[in-house]
Amino acid sequence: MQTRKLYYEDSHRSAFSAQVLACTQAEKGYEVVLDATAFYPEGGGQAADTGTLGGVRVMDTRERGAQVVHLCEKPLEPGQTVEGMIDWDKRFARMQQHSGEHIVSGIIHRRFGYHNTGFHMGADVITIDFDGVIPEKALPEIEAEANGAVWANLPLHIWYPSPEELPKVAYRTKKQLPWPVRIVEIPGYDCCACCGTHVSATGEIGLIKLFSAVNFRGGTRMEMACGARALDILNETYAQNRLVSQAFSAKIFETGAAARRMNDQLAELKFQRVALQRKLFAQTAAGYAGAGNVLHFEEGLDGTETRELADTISGVCGGWAAVFSGGEEDGYGFCLAARNDDLRPLCAEMTAALHGRGGGKPAFQQGRVQAKKEEITAFFASVR
Image 1 (cartoon, one colour):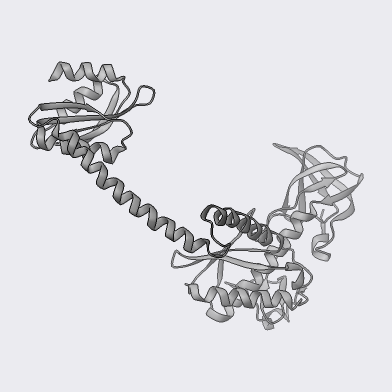
Image 2 (image 1 turned 180 degrees about the vertical axis):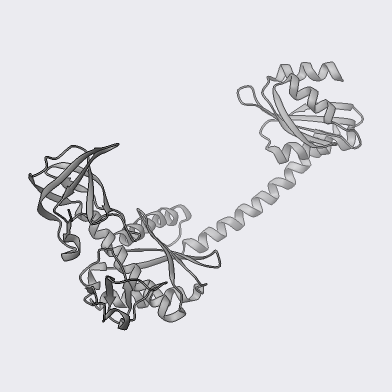
């Protein structure tokens, strides 16, 4: 039994009639084989079509030998004729992505000689891996050329060359393929072996947008989007940028400069805050001058600040300093600091008694305990 592949005869066909050849129960549904289908099975980096057969939901589509297998929610009776309907919006978006990717890969192959070594069509963007480094400054040029191909509305030529013709076709491939080979050509931009579905003319792609290109395993990983998906991303980006412009009281195309100014202001404020905090720590420590071993609670400190206050106190108290910051519900972060003492035995005893854990260098032990303030106070009263 062989399935006639209507998606190759007409990639824009979204509805069709076909006879059910077989239906078998599977682990997660029913596997249905038809005599013909417009449902594209997963392959070549393109996801499988979904839709309905006779009103029954098709959750996935796979190719198995010469057959296309549809994973359906409910069984279909062999011999009956069913109406098929694919989820056209998803299919057309994938066609836009796939054809746009061919244009970009073709341009990069022509300009740099690099091959497309990996291709994934995600829910939002396309990820493509190339076996060479693409200069960042080249991205605007590549994008402009790719969109030039879109706006030229070039017709795609898709065919199976004969065994005699195939060796004469200069198509993009990483290795020589045995006949038969399906060739997808975008005149002047790309000629490539491909099993996916494509638009009829490049104008249907609408828009190609390159988002990023980063070094990856000695080559380049690129993210891009085409058509409706590219428009959705750009619209969302613009909407977010409007919120940023309102927050910064900046013009829509000046938010980057406004953000840099804000970062500079925050850095200055942070510097001022640290200076003030160190003065407060010094004042707090001065109150413990010569006091020997010290237990101190301070609200609102992070780990770095707790350590700094403990260090400051231990420098003047003449013993060790135990600084705690936290609360009754979430527990307390702590730092034990000393100038010469080995605090590891004290930390081990304390964390065992107060349900905590900690560690570090001999003169600096830091961690967290799950205990109340009165329990912490009682413990140190017993060891001081």
